[in-house]
Length: 421
Image (cartoon, rainbow, N blue to C red; front, side):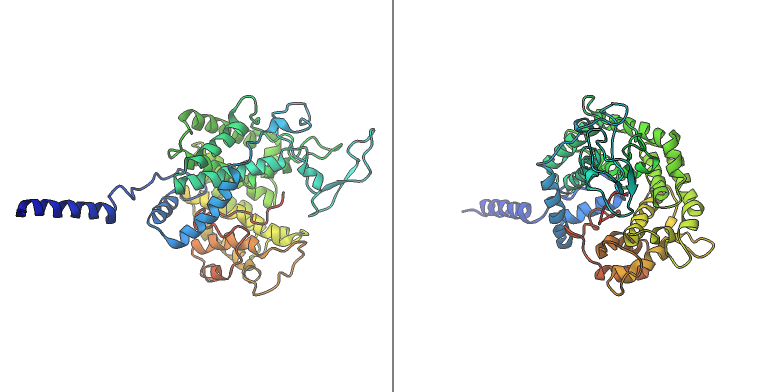
């Protein structure tokens, strides 16, 4: 055999080995950066690249995420039109939920089917609020689209994107099943109120997850079309208009506790997502004197939340809104984390106040009907990422929430011991 054929065989073998062992330049091509309102799109992109390169810690987190996403593949879609009774006024497309802490005082009868009058029991959830209204279904819409969109982005598995598409189209876009973009009948109280401003928190506490899911799908999810994106932007624009102009929205915006914080967070995120970055920026700027100064004390406590029967839950709950609002602020050039009020109050100090209980170093000394240490985990992660040395040191001592710690894959705080506000 001549030298030339041998050389040819050798070169061919080298080519095969190179193809097997050396990844091509396109193997880890940068994925698109989602234009998210709360999540940091550039950080998601970098996380995706690390996953593609086999990062073992992220792989473990991804398994937890895909377990959740796989569970959603066999559920839904959900719609507001299938509840047993329409909202007051009769339009089945109107969202309906019932006040969670209000209870009947008499046994229902034919003449009094609700058992009226209703009385309030703070922190004690009436189980009937989870039947016959849209509250449980909308939580599934929020959670599923977020999990599914993230799972698609990180894995490329089109099943996740297609399921998210179906859920979003059914709840928001299909004329036969869509929800009207208002919350006129949220947290109604039978025989008392057809709806209340306070019910806006049904959406404000986690609807920004849907806003970010839409942005993630917008990076090229199969089946999620330009028409779908435009229709969701239109829905969000109409909903934002309702929040700004409806008396319920104005009342909720004036609330001095977690309801007001969540209202601002939702307003800012929707404004950013629909192109009104000036409103998003101004909302975050205003939150310094309007929210932080009166709601957080100099020692970092949140007096209005500490007064609740579930003071731990509501202290962490309010900080979920603050950390997400700060995340929106990052997109519009406002560092809410660095702000300190006249008494030294601020977000970092508020998180630090929770660290002894969050790490198990000390008991929570305020009223709490159901203490879950892991409820603080995401907000501690957020403070650590914002540069808080005490929070960073606390991260290894945190209690993982059920289903595992997903912060590395979706670094935006969630209420991990969720109950209706």
